Structure formats: structure tokens, C-alpha cells
Length: 344
Length: 169
Image 1 (cartoon, each protein chain N blue to C red):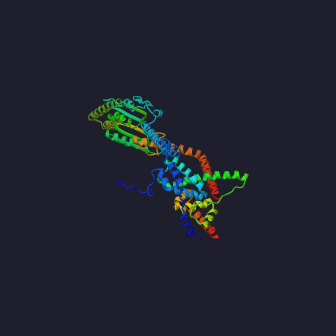
Image 2: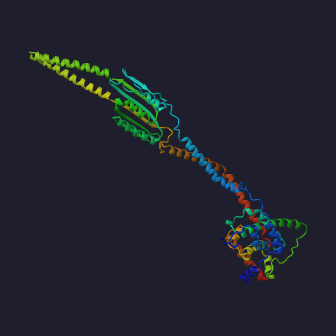
Image 3: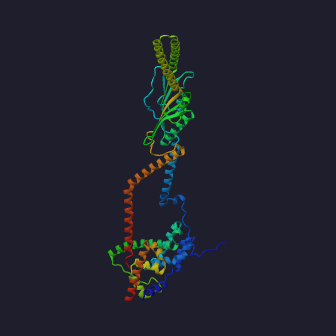
């Protein structure tokens, strides 16, 4: 008997259920099915576990978004420590140092004094500001240059550096008449850490120079008249030498007057900018609220990932043990079935 | 206008439909497995009792109703085998068991009947599924919980042994 003949015979003798069994089974099969399980019941077991993964991910994502959005509005605490005042008190000048913890820019801006009109004054101001990060540092530096130009001034020097903590140092000259305006506008570029305004009165010095000029001019005129009257050649030569000295003194006086006037014409503003200590200068970040919210959300997500990884590492041995137990049970069950079905 | 698909194509809507279509398959499988018609009929009833309880879980997307019912039948039969093994162990302690050999399928030649009796239950079940019920390799693998390759190997071995026993006579 060949295999094909065996197969044909087996297929030809396919068992049929008796009428009695058919009736019995149909009676069972037509009975009302057990109550359909509710959705909640169906979620038990594996399905509920399977839903836990996306649900957990959704909760983690929502938490990150909420934290990111709610915390993106604040710019963090203002640094309270301020550098030592660098105010110099001149004999005739006055120095005004802003409160080192001045967090309110508006308050600080109002505190910036201006030069008195009608008198020549040397105006110098030093501002130390803190900005959020390197991007904000770049923006603030460019705005400072623009402010100087807008107010008719110019830039004496700029030092700009980025890194873990970015910083910029600018020396600006602006017309003294616009100095207070410059300080006010520059103060708005960041959080004020320190502000130092010094005004030295130059009017008295200039008046002294003017009086001295008048005296020298009078002396030159007197010397001229004396020279005209002199008959002796030796006397004439001595007077002419004195007049030459007086004229030299007059030129020096005029130069001093011009220098004093120039000193009073433009104010010097020293602006120091620095990024926050913990801003992570190397990490680019824009100042918009959306970007900050995204940054915060990503940071929260990263922390959630770290926590999840830590939990996974902690429970990995347990999970491995459970998997090993399940695999062993399955293998034993398979062997038991094979043994049961090995007998004729 | 909707055309009613034949049951062979569309999945059954009720267990009664499935029972009507696949009762012979379930019985045939159990008969080959147990070699006892009375036991096979009892197990077939138990299979449909279980199927009624589990009907809500039947997913046509994961396999046909026939495969699903045969899987339940196999679980039911394995439970019976376990109980039978325990019972036999107890009885062997008291007296040696007596096995009454009787034909379990009508229309088989005595030689083939005798050959089938020498095969193990595992060999008979793969013959029942692949040869008698003509399940394909994948469906058989799903019922037995093994790979399609293992099904082919097991079938080949079973047919070879059966051929040898039948021809030995």
C-alpha cells in the first residue's frame, strides 16, 4: 500500500458526526451566548496593559507640554550680586550708582540723571547688564550699536565673546545732550546688574581758561603797544620775546578750551553685557516664548526618559526572571503535551 | 442589493453556524486523537461548550472558525489526556488496564486501522489535520502551536511509519 493509497483511504473514510451528537452540539451552540463583556471588562488583562503604553506616553508628553508652557514665561530670578561700584568721585563731580539689585528696568531708567543745561559737564556712565543667552547677547550688542548711532554717537570699542558664558564690552560716545536718553535705552537691553553715572562739572575750568585768555590777550596788546613805543633796540627785542611767549600761552589756552569743550560735548557710556551663569552659552536658544516652551518641554521629556530608563534598568532583572519563568513553563507544557501524545 | 456569501468564504455570524459547518471536522480530529468514538463525542460536546463561552473572543481576522474550534478541541483533548493519565496511574496500581480495541472510523481497511493504532496520538493528530481534514500547513501549525516546518516533518514521519506498519501487515 503506497502513501497515496493510504491518503486516499483516510480521506475517503472521513468521520461523520452522528445525528445524536449533532443534535446535542446544536443544542449547545444555539443557547444564548454569555453576556457580552463591557468595554471596561474587555480592557482587562493584556489589552489594558497594551493601552498603558500609549496612555503613559500621552501623559508624559502632556506633562512636558504643560510644564514647558507654564514655565516659559518667567525669565528666572534676577542675579542679586552686583559688582563693586566703580564710581569715582571727583572734586567737583557727582557719582550716582544705581542699586545693584535693580530688577525693575523702568525704575533704573528713571534713576538715570541727565546733564544740567547751560553748563559744560563731563558725563560718563557705566552699565552692567545680564541677558538670557548668547543669542540675546548678540541682539543686545547690535541694538546698543544702533542706539549709539541713532543718538548721533559712535562706537569707540567693542569686545564681544561667546562661550560657556558670553560677554560683550562696548565703549560708546554720544552727544552729552543725549546721554540720559542713551542710558535709558541701553538699560532696557537686559537685566541691570549695576549702573554707574558720573557727572563732572567743567564749566568752572572753562571759565578759568576764558579769564586767563582775556588776561593773556590784554598782555599781548600791552606788549604790542610797548614795542611800538620802544626806542632802544635791545628793549624792543626783550618785549617782542615776551609777546611771543604770551602768544604761545594763548595758543595753549585755546587748545585747552577746545579740549574741555570737546570733553563736554560727548558723553562716554561703558556698557558691559553678560549671559546668565546657567544659560549654557553653547546651546543656541532664541528668546521667543514658543522656543523657550519647546526647550522646557524637551528638557522635561529628557528627564522623563531618564527616569523611565532608570526604572527599566531597576526592573530589568525582574522582567528577565518573569520571562524566564514563562519560557520555562511553556517549554515544560510543550514537553508534557508531547509526552501525553507520544502514547498510541 | 447584497449578495449572501457562502459560509466557506465569510466567517460565521453565530456559533450555531460554525458548529453546523465544522462539527464533523472537530469530531474527526478528536476521534483520531483519542481512538475512541464515545470519548471523541464527549470531547466534541465539551469543545462546543467552551466555544460558547469564548465566542465573544473569536476574531475572524486572526484565523478561521475551523482553526479556532480545532484549537479549542485540542486543549480539551489534552485536558482529557492528562486526566486519563492520572486515572490510569491510579488504576495500574490496583490492576493492569484492559484496552478494548475497536474501529474508530468507518470505512477504513483493517490493515490501515491496525497501522493507525500503532501510531502515537501526536502522529495521528497531524494525519487527521493535514490528511483527513485537509488543513494547510499554516493552519495546522496554529492548531498544534508549532512551526509549519515542524508540521511537515511530523507529517512526513507519521506517513512513513504508517506506510511501514500497513505494509508489514
